[in-house]
Image (cartoon, each protein chain N blue to C red):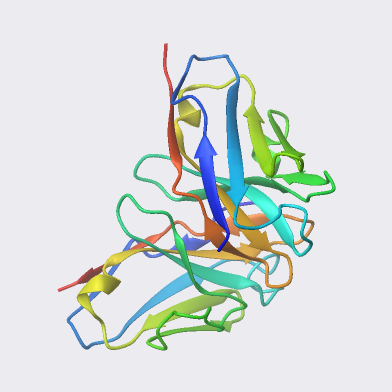
Amino acid sequence: QVQLRESGPGLVKPSQTLSLTCTVSGGSISSGGYYWSWIRQHPEKGLEWIGYIYYSGSAYYNRPLKSRVTISVDTSKNQFSLNLISVTAADTAVYNCARLMTTFEAFDIWGRGTMVTVSS
Amino acid sequence: QSALTQSPSASGSPGQSVTISCTGTSSDVGSYNYVSWYQQHPGKAPKLMIYEVNKRPSGVPDRFSGSKSGNTASLTVSGLQAEDEADYYCSSYAGSNIYVFGTGTKVTVL
């Protein structure tokens, strides 16, 4: 059974870079048919899709974040990562990684999420 | 790309039905049959309940059903149970490798 787990700092200073990693277990990130995604949820608010990457390295991002986001993949470690530069308090959120089924365009497996607070 | 619009709350008594709506535009919900629904209990990760408008993943009770008309998708929970109390989010493919989520609906079982 495929599982996803997020890891990374829970506190980031304003203007710095938020970096998170999602480790995939129980299956290969290189298996076709899935996009590996990042989604965030601001406190007491809804979900926001950040972007996703295919195992080949092709990545797509939500337009409002595109200038600040990079998603990368490391198939040797079965991991993919999120970098968000120039963070502000508005980037404080729970960050989830999730698997997106390309055939059905739905997020079928989610990590538990990790809270990231942007504060000095 | 704007968030899909959901009513903030919905409620029903045990055994009753509740329907949640998700309104988008002709660029997302109206153009693609790639609407999905997610259930989120407090402090937990979202769980896929419906995909491709009306299909249920294995293990999801048939009390959950989905539909779509024009730019609006709907999720109906029949025979409400206490464990159905949660936040529900819709999502849609919006073309050009873009996805959008709904604003979320809190379902309360009275």
